[in-house]
Image (cartoon, rainbow, N blue to C red; front, top):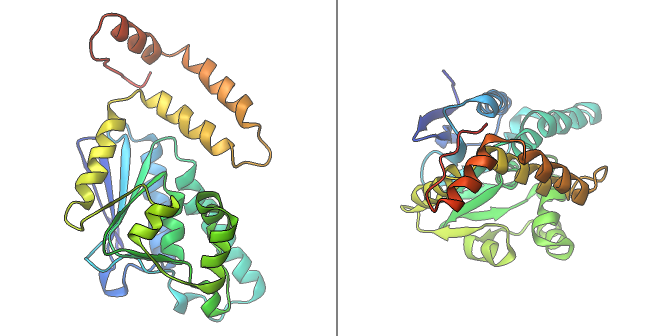
Length: 259
């Protein structure tokens, strides 16, 4: 049982709901620890192939980090806070071998937007507001926001949003490439499930290789083309490759097993 998260697996989709609506689902230390545990389990859980992360209630996906927990931190404690967040949650999500979709159901601010950006796809409801307001606290984004926002929207727009602390609407976020789709609030989870369903029909090991190859583009110590070649070649040794090509030749639907 988790105190701050609700989790459920249905039709091979893991639903993760941050369950702190009274606090606008702010990320405190305990919530981050629970996210770490749940995402780690998802890595190897054979019952789930795609995850959807959302926030409880109509107001917020995650309205930020819990400021009361770190307002008195020293330099060393601040650096440790960021470092732990990177390795235990945000990088863990980004490097997950299975797709994770953020269902942004309201405010995604600060650590909340950073959480959404660590996910592989983002779908926002039309009432969502997104932003990185850290400079208003005398800080900068510390959970990967300066890097991932720049990757997603480009340097000039990322700097504008970070330096002004402006919030943007879901439609603006979509036009920038920050979110993949915008829906009504009521259709949000259904849209995420539609995307998840498309992925669940595909070969799991191929999805894993695709995530690895695309992520390698942003890694300074990797050559993305080399990673792509290696991952492409590895898949020729899988049963799913044999099944996929056989199904194509026999004009039938492939039955992938993840082997």
